[in-house]
Image 1 (cartoon, rainbow, N blue to C red):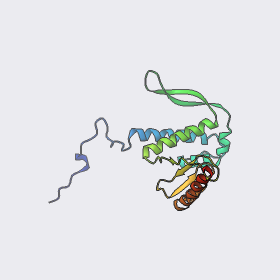
Image 2 (image 1 turned 135 degrees about the vertical axis):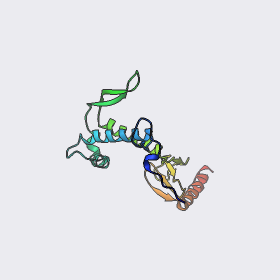
Image 3 (image 1 turned 180 degrees about the vertical axis):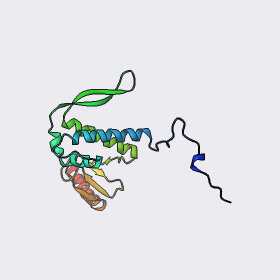
Image 4 (image 1 turned 90 degrees about the horizontal axis):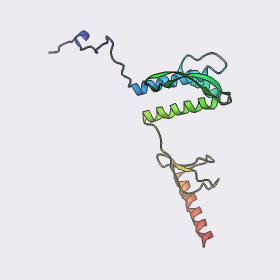
Amino acid sequence: MCEERSATADPKVSGSTELPIPIPLGIDSLITEFNEEAARWSRRLQGDDPYSVDACLTKICVHLGTIVDMPERQFTIWAPHPDGGDGFTTTLLDGVDGILRLARLHHRAQALLGVVETTTFLSDPCPHCARKALAVSKDQERVTCKGCRIVWDKSHFALLSNVLDFERKTVAA
């Protein structure tokens, strides 16, 4: 036998007639900061004001060089108050500051989502540019030089590494 319950029979949230927001506070505050920062910098560019975060970020990416070249100017921002809480304050920011602020928010979002990828570097220098910037992919199928951007698959890099090791041993002898 199936018993039906009405929605009004469920316990209500104390002090509210609405259901609680299912988004954790840390995520909600990060989203708010991202929205404010993206809107702040997209409004500094010529053209229509974007209506969504996606549109703001697209506008910022298209005009990245313009933002980087922006001179210092005064902005109103939220800042922690010494006695607790937050309040409005003014600060001087230029375009590079804006891009760095957006990059920090991006890294916070990646960390919150758990998509931060660690990079494993090899101790050998790059055979092409001689910088110690060889990074192994997460699946260890590719080796990429972060300096000159050349990519090898693991079999070609192993072959190249064996040839270079042989040449090093010959030179040392």
